[in-house]
Image (cartoon, rainbow, N blue to C red):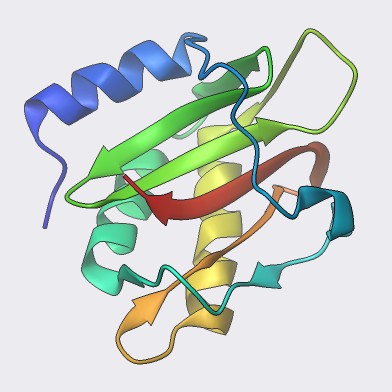
Length: 135
């Protein structure tokens, strides 16, 4: 499944710095920020996660930015990719291709029963944790 035009437009707005207010993964305080984390609940379809990875990879050197606490980088079907700001900085960013690379690691390590859930630091950037979640 590929992201729709509306989803891509929304994602492009998010890449420009839209903020999802007060969003944070429930257990982020217990997660070492620079380690890949698999989750055993809310598995998302592999095809939807792959579509977001492909989309973010195609953005290449474009910056995936977070102004505030969180920003959605991609939404397709019932899946969204959200970046969380783990620093005390007002805004943080990573190259979108690095976000895609980090999500690919999650896909490769955390897929089970044709679904995947988890997150990872964005391109070894401990300021950003990207997470695969239900939309």
